[in-house]
Length: 213
Image (tube, rainbow, N blue to C red):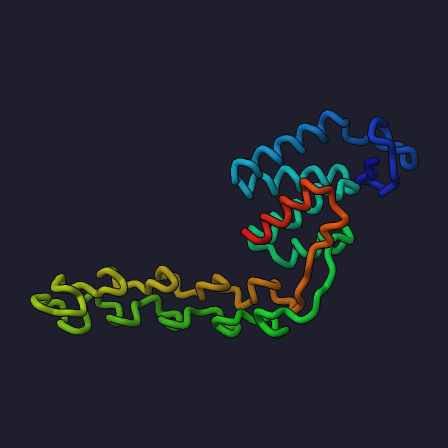
């Protein structure tokens, strides 16, 4: 069964025009092609391309719950956490399991507590160990017999770059990437779980591996 992307009416897989609105429906060949392309991208580890193919598939056939499940989880993997879980809930493939254990229901990033900036450099982007100079703070760059830098004179934390190694010099929180939102729940404060029993065994296993990976 496929759902009409125009009016939402249920149609037989082989019909080319909606029984309700009479608008054209995607052909089985097109849907099969997108599904194969999506699975090939997924098998090769190309998460972004796989999400694009499955998103296109469910836009043409909103009734394809397996494609919807994979699209939702792939969006979560790409950092679109709210969008991913929202899609899964719309398809009745996910449910709330209580308060998010990572942020304890606040929705804020547990590392920066919603401040969005790196907790080590406080947003300055400079290495907190050497103050951004790139020199060993113990010997001032002279090296010699310095036990801290091993005699090379450069900061052992940043390797001499002067940039904060915790945030790779971005100044943003390395956990939430500067969004301030909990990466586990997307800022909703709610923990969710997938209804694996609603999916066929192969898709359920793929979804599980994606979420756990």
